[in-house]
Amino acid sequence: MEETSPPRRIALALILGSQLMLTLDTSIITTALPHVQRQFDFSQAALSWVQNAYVLAFGGLLLLGARAGDLLGRRRVFVAGIALFTLASLAAGLAPTGPLLIIARAVQGVAASLAVPSTLALLVSGSRSAADRARLIALYSAVIGAGGSVGIVIGGVFTDLLSWRWGLLVNVPIGIAIVSLAPRFLAETPRSSGNFDLGGALTSVLGMTGLVFGFIQAAEKGWGDPTTYGSLAVGVVLLVTFVLIERVVAEPITPLRLFASVERSGAYAGRFLIVGGNFAVFYFLSQYLQEVLHLSALETGFAFVPVTGMFFAMVYVVRPLLERFGRPVLLVASIAVALVGTWWLSLIGTGSSYFPDVVLPLLVIGVGQGIAIILMTNGGVAGVEPRDAGAASGLVNVAHQVGGSLGIAILTIVFTHGTGGGTSLDDRTAGFRDAFTGATVFFVVALVLGIVVAIGTARSKRYPANAADLVPAE
Image (cartoon, rainbow, N blue to C red; front, side):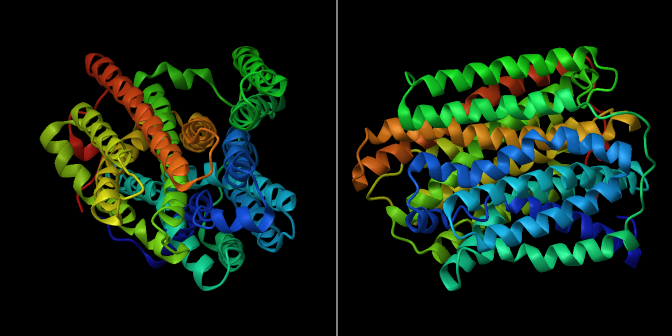
């Protein structure tokens, strides 16, 4: 591993620290959901917006944020995004009503969409060699993979010892520190000339919002409600319009040439499915642990520590596994392992216990998803030209956030159906079990996709022959 100078270590800490903060905010309030639901009298469908308002705005505007970084300078956009995120976190932490909390969470998502695309681009642009670049991407992948579970742990600590609000307010001093230090330790990137693709940005975010809103309405009011099928129809039309705009506009926020690579397309789709299943697992498991197993918020937070540890541990085992098995085999195997862990979790009941019924499946999920996320992050930016670096890194995160948002929305329908409309402990447990089964289906589809992509990329000889080109030695 190459030596790193103090200024470079600080720059790395700023980038990875900000990425961790922005990623964990997708889940930092997860442990507190039962408390938030009671305080603001949310229904199950309305409660999902506390999570989805952030994730949807985050994922929906990431492409525009990536383009802004290309045109205005990635450091400038990064700092602006962190500054807005800091202010929105303050507003969310102090929100006196449920609607204001959801609005503040949406603003947090907008801010994150500006900052996050620049983090990976700044990280890659600062690498000194192919091995250094691979090491940095592996660390970045671990931060993203573990961010969700780290957020749950931190949220549990604050909820139980202080208040769920502190899980949001803690971002304020961190954000101030990053905004203060970034201009000194992060180099500005060259600006590209061009225009913003506002039509593409609006149709993409509104289209995804329509789909998520439609699924959540289906959970609350049923498929026959006009707002349900109307929202879904509008969402589909807007997303089709988005693709048509990207085909003809001179400077698209999503260059369709990025999908010409089987490896990249598979990485985006696979990430969408895996994160969609995993977000929903964390979302519902947090409620199951508190409502059925009667764990406190603090205990629930620490219940996710094993999966967090596994996410980070996978950074150190990916390279030897790649050398032994090769990337196509390892990718398929890692998805299969995560699938088994998720299916195992779907066997829970009212008489289950944390050990072994919850912790062992979580460990298995951590191993499988930890490896898969690293491989898919590499795949999402593989062979990208410098002019498309921001868009490609943006798509990596779009797949992550939009997958999580749609995953929660779709599996909320499954959960609601599983409860049969009842509110007893048995009814709720049946809903949780069905939600985990639905998440398993996400992984089944991802596994099939992984096999297809592995065959296609192997035939086109797109995989590097040397595993050291992907993940470096320590």
